[in-house]
Length: 176
Image 1 (cartoon, rainbow, N blue to C red):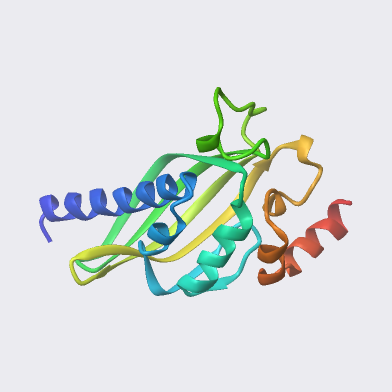
Image 2 (spheres, rainbow, N blue to C red):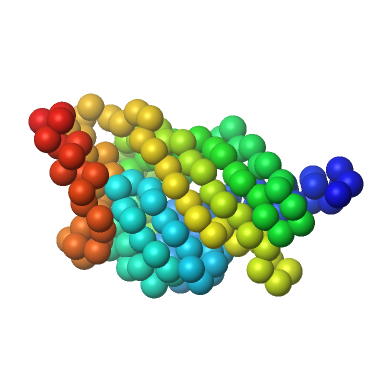
């Protein structure tokens, strides 16, 4: 594969991950999940989800009427072949329970990022489009002000019922 083709794949993969977080930050969950393969595996924030439907339920239940913003940085794409790539990045996550930003006048009050996470995505070409086939992420740092398991910040009851909470219980047992 020539370098120009490789650069094009890198750009498309970065575009997809940015588009996902932009759509998520603006409550466009139905459009956001279309950026994933039908059989997506999502292991982020303590969740262990499979398929678009579970991911969509978690997005609706997790963010609900709150505001979240993702700041993505240090993205590196490793092209495996013309149909597969791996993507690494850092994400600063800002979260507010003050309500939906699109329904407010004036700014929200964020007290710094709630979480800083690293992320890994498996990217796959499906037809002419690049999609996210798997997403995994780990919390590197979380805000001490939350005094909670970082992945549970903002998750509604429905999302908590749908998630794999074993990791959460283990963390709470070890960290109080």
